[in-house]
Length: 343
Image (cartoon, rainbow, N blue to C red; front, side, top):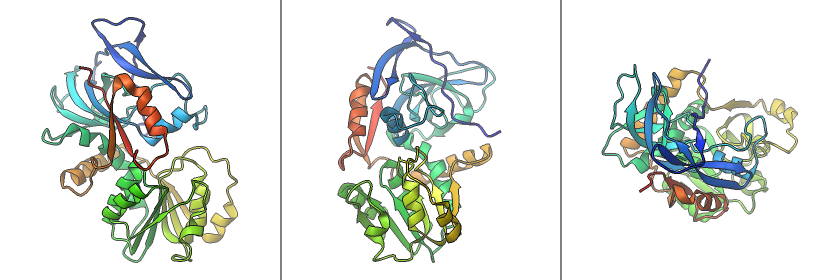
């Protein structure tokens, strides 16, 4: 079975002292607090990472808003998975990685904390000359590169990306390298569309409100729809819009829109258009590792910018304020980073 995202164990305590650390706990919908927990020790086959940076992902925001179903998440819970830090302790029978290595993490949830433990599978060693703050977003690149490959993009195809949040902006940079005929992106905010144009979008469209039908906005220029549609929105209802925007024999790659959909889905339209709908998480562990390597290489080669979209940096002690910032729908709030290094 392919490995899935895991939440490393963390024992909460009601005191502050040696051997304890600060961590964040989502107590209930819209409520996140700073708590104390024991600093974990790595077991056999594990390493401990002193966390430096964790980005607030859209999936974290969905949990904060209560937009995920109970079978996905229950409260209280811990969040945070866009992680960069430094290995500070190595457990028995771990080879290759070592204390002092700078690393990005993937498939580890619950990292709004000073320390987490994980296995080497979840690590990607970073060059020490790469600023750690630029390393945390490498976590999103495996799914994005896989999405681009699943799209089967070629120079004769028109591609639509809906949403230019953090992942959407990284997606635009990657899809641009697949050389589509037209790369069309949509968003609610001018600031994000400006970055999208810088990153290679050939057409950008400002959506008047979150419930607007994309084809009402772009249909005059692309009346036949799009060969490849990649939704990078949070809400599951964006899939209804994606189906409407897809061309005959088109393909929808579900990078986003994995939240709950409360709109009816017209599966006859899927059948009539002969659409393919694909999910994006790699299905084999070896692929996950390969995409991790490729993602880091794109950043190191200067082809993907993971730093420019960072708009706010907030200390772990103020994580509640950081979530309030990230939850606001504004053009000047794109990526909020939590600094987990407690001075």
